[in-house]
Image 1 (cartoon, helix red, strand yellow):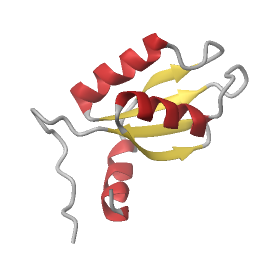
Image 2 (tube, rainbow, N blue to C red):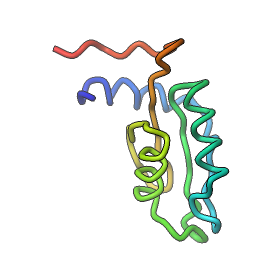
Image 3 (tube, rainbow, N blue to C red):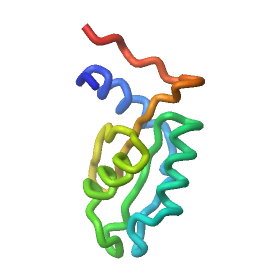
Length: 99
């Protein structure tokens, strides 16, 4: 993913709600399933790690969820992160072209 595409996705993420929350349970199978379903439907999702209770950092959580859902980490800021995965059957987001 190019920096231009990443910047485009970051601009889209500003207006979406946080739908994933990782707390004291860490990264559970249920959380991965929720993320996978949401990525299939929306292509871009925002998640949050509760820093007071979570056993993993926001960066670690984002990378683990991305690896298990075959998505990409767009950004991690503070306790929040954004993930993207293109839907091969019905793409909703059109990324800027690579040069």
